Image 1 (cartoon, one colour):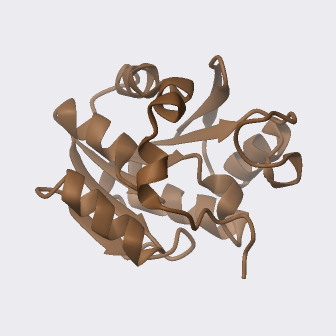
Image 2 (cartoon, one colour):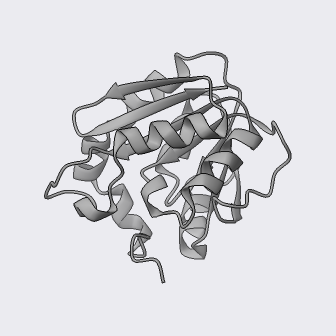
Length: 180
């Protein structure tokens, strides 16, 4: 079993201290300033925290997660959105199904990074947003051995075909904006 996958109580993902650290509203604002986004796939949606923030901003959101408990929790918070049990490496959608794809602190958990980014490229029309932990040891978030270096994420993105990569440093995280 992949020890990088978060398998604790889905409601812990909505802890007030955690939400503050994630700068959810700022992340959503930066993503939505990139261009016209009407549809979005939230990969590794967890409890639906980021999906809910996008939805509040008028975006038609769908989400996937490999954990049934996460999907159940996300549906409780967003009953009008569609959620599916699926892996990031095999997205059950057609090419160009969404204006954007969002990874909220989940890329470091996947089994196959290359497949995951290629799948995001395939199903997105314009953008992929990757929110990840900084590559440094901290008392909050995953251990350093589970964190991804910026150069690695940039290399994966280039290999998948993204033409432009913008890196926005936040207080605790990094938001990568990948443009097709």
